[in-house]
Structures are given as C-alpha cells and as structure tokens.
Image 1 (cartoon, rainbow, N blue to C red):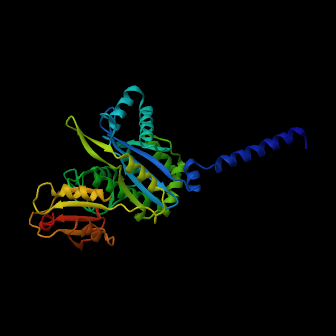
Image 2 (image 1 turned 90 degrees about the vertical axis):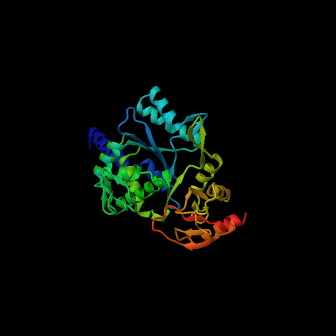
Image 3 (image 1 turned 45 degrees about the horizontal axis):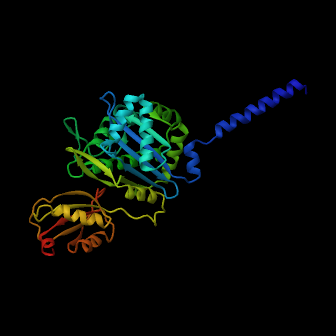
Length: 372
C-alpha cells in the first residue's frame, strides 16, 4: 500500500470515529439524567399582544431523577427583589437597555442570584407561540372539571384542548383560589403533556419544529427527546405545584409579593430529598361559617405557624354553622384529625373530591368562639 493510500485510509478512519463521537455525544440534559442530578428549567411566558411583550408568568420547573419528582414553583412577577423593584419592572428595564434575548437572560441571572440557585435551562415563549406549540402537538387532553369561560361559552369538560382553548384553561383565575388555582391547572397540563410524550414519543422533526417556535431557549432536540423518554418514569402523584413562599404586602397602594427567603431555601433543599424524608405540604382553606369578622384570617395565621399552607381564606355559604367542620378533601389519612387538634375543636369528615385543590377545608362554627 502506498504512503498516499495509507494517509487516505487513516483520514477516513479518523473522520468515521469523529463522526461517531458527534452522534453519540450526550446532550446537557442527558448527562444530568445519567448522573441523577436535579434539573431546573426556567419557563417565562409573555403577553402576545403587547409590544414590547410584558412578563406574564415565571415558572421554575424542577425534576429530581433520584425520586422521580417533578415540581412546578410559581414566582409572581410582582415579587420584590429590592425596595419597590420587582421582577416585572426589572424585565422592562432590561428590555430598554438591551435587546430581547439579553433582556430575558438578564432576568434569568437576576432570579438565580435572588434565589441563590443555578438554573441551567430556560424556555421563553409568548401566548401566540404557546398556541402554535399545542396545535403542533395536535392538542392536549386535559380534564376540565370546572366552568372556564371560552369565547361566549365555556370549555367542554372532556376531549382535547386546542392551543387557544389550552391558553384559556391555564390563564383563568377563579375568585376562590386566584393564582393558586391557575398554577394547579399548570400542574395538570404538564401531567397531560408528560402522558402525551410517555405514550407517544415525539418525532425528532416535530421536536425541532417545536423548538423553532420558542422565542428563546437553550434546549436541544436531544434534550427534549431525553426528557420525553424520562416521562415514562414520572407518576402523577410525583408532580407538585408550589408558590415561592412569602406574603402579599402593600406599598403606596400597590401590592407586591415579598419572598420568605428562609422558607424558600428550605423548599429547594427539600426538592432533592428522598420521598420518605420530604416533609409533606398540606394545603388548607379556611371559611368563616360563624359570622365573626376576621375569624378566618385569625385561624389561618395560627395554622401557618404550624407549618400548614393556607391557600384560601373566605366565607362559607352562610354563617349558621354551630359546629366547626374539618373536611378531608384529598383522602390523605390523619390530616383532618391533626388540624382538629391544632385548632382545638372541629368534627373531621371525609368529603373527598377528585383533583381537589386543597387537602382540607375548615368551616369555622360558633363552637370555635366558645373555646376562646
């Protein structure tokens, strides 16, 4: 064999090996999944009609391969990061100083610094792009278990939602649960998406088209395919929805969300714990059934000191309840009894609802007033 032929053969073999390495090289998501490392994805959704597009939702999606837990943490755009400066105002400020891409990435960096958390992946789209994505997937089958306005009517309770219908489903804010109800629907929607990918693995060409639809992302086709494959391991009970811990405060007649940094740090630490070790989050609503002004708020404050997550405070259907009722909505054993002991009265009852947004409903009766 001549020297020239030897060089050609060596070059060919080198090219073959190099090409094989490129084809087998794992994507960033694949590497983390293989090492069983937690994944954090920042999801930003923007208004579609406004220019420049204003910030609508900030969602932090966490997946822990060790425990197969997927968590959706909602961060209100009006979250204060300094005196009177919110994430929403920071986003607007970044848009004025930079182009759209730099503005979004600057916001991501600010969130990482504020939460003291590395968020390696991001996905940004406006409502129009979201509609396109859902329609490209052929719609999403989501259980609609309440009346949600859509056009001049309401969404149908069964069937597949189109992009426009999915947007109406996700953005509806019911008076009773407000933002929490919206975030719970995001939870169900993501579960439906996981089922879609788990049952019907996406075609790489479709994934490529989906990523083109996004306004901004650093996810690759191989990343999405790896996540779709991982979807088979996620169970519905392993999906949780959170809201960054904190409270609503008012300054100059404006409402803001003030983050509880200690509780937030605890939340992210617990995300990576094993299932048996993780402290269960119990969601409660407190309703005034006795007519005493401010009593529901008072009980809610006491329950929050016990570590319970009170997501709704309001009035019962009437103020004629003689006895306090502790209604078990989710079917988790022992919760109603625990709360009855915490407030010092109340009759535990099972009123289990499918897809309940709260674990326990408390209706305060007149017997609570007598124990004061």
